Each structure stands twice: as C-alpha cells, then as structure tokens.
Length: 284
Image (cartoon, rainbow, N blue to C red; front, side, top):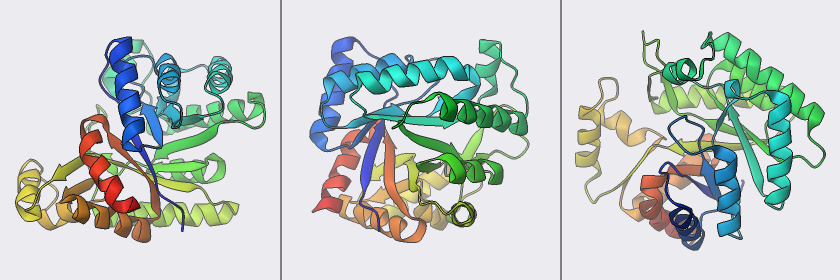
C-alpha cells in the first residue's frame, strides 16, 4: 500500500509576499505538494509554481490542472522543461481537458465536445512525450470518463479522480459531486485499464470540503440540503467530502485509501489549516 501524500491547491491570488508566506505556511504544516489551478481569473500557473518553489524548500510543486486546450503543445513543453529545471526537478505536471465553457469563449477557443477536448489532450501528451527530456516531470492526468481514464492509465504517473460529474442537461460545464458508488465504478474502470497496460500509477482525490464538527449527521444534513442528488447518508460517504473531528476524518482518509487506493489527497486552499489537523492524525 502506498504511503500517503498530501497536497493543497491554492486559489487566492495575492502579493509576492503573501504568496510566499502561505507557501511557507503550507510547508510548515507538513504538506507534500503545493499546487495551482489553471483558470482565467487566477494567476498564471507557471510563474506561481516558480514562486512557490522559491518560497518553500521541501514540497514538490505543480499544476492542478492545466487546461490543455489553452496550450500549444510545443510551447508548453518549453515552459515545462524550464520550470522543472528552475524548481530543481520538483515539478508535477497536471493536465486536464478543461470543462468551463465561459473560459473557452473568453479565450476565443472553441469549446468543442468532450471527444474533441480529449483528442487535444492526447495530442498534447504525445508531443510532450516526444519533446521532454528524460527524466521528465511527474505527469498527473485528471478526469472520470472511460476514454480519459484509459489515457491516464497509459500515460500518467498519477491519476486524479475528479469525484464529480456533469450536471444532467447542463452545457456550460457545471459539475456536481459524485456518490461513493459512482466513484467506485470509475476507480474500477481505471484499475482495469491500468492492468491492461501493466502500470501502477498513484491515485489522487481532490477533496472539496473539510468540515470539522462533532456532529457529522448535522453537518451532512446541511450539505445535503444544498444539493438535490445526494442524501445525508450519501454525503457522509462521498469521497470528496471529509466531515467530523480530526480523528474521524483521519479514519475516513485511511478508509478511502483502502477502498479506492487514494493515497494522494489534495484539498483546496480554504481547508488548508483544518486538513493539517487531519494530516497530523494520519501520520501519528
């Protein structure tokens, strides 16, 4: 069974001093990976990654995840090689297809279809494999569809499960949390594909909320009331949610490694301090 790794995905821009301070804070809390997303309203990924590496000495740094549609593969390879060198080989390159229609339209890029977006990601991966020198950075692919999981099983060092699904009927990229049973199905599919290619990638999950409470049922009831597709019991079991005391949430993290193989757990920046308590419980 793989050892745990814990990452934090930063969402809030700030000054250079503020950025450095929170990267150092994450390092002091014990996070293993400092990550940045790729959305138009947020800071550019590669400068942010470099600044994180300069501020914190121990953690790896990475993108979680780049929208492949925004990047020319050849120019991306140049940025990846440079960033990996300047971070001392600590780069984790996370890639995905992109899913927010408004961002594509703002950038003047055709939103296309799920198939065309995966096509572009596959082309990007092929070019990166051709252009990146060995040893190349760790590659993480995020997704949930069969074709995406097969692509990840073939190429990725880390498969990141979104734990989410498209809202039925939505055309703007809106997502909702998946049930534990749905994630079971997606992980089982990934395992089949991994077996086909005789590979053993690390499995990652992005936790959407960390809710510290002594009353799990009451907290889950509040969350379920904001949704129309998950019951209270399903909220309590959802792998993208951690609810309870730090000790209870640590048990959930361990149970999900056993059930799904999620040894690499990423949380969003607002949960950084709360999840640090869970990390300490897991590691004690």
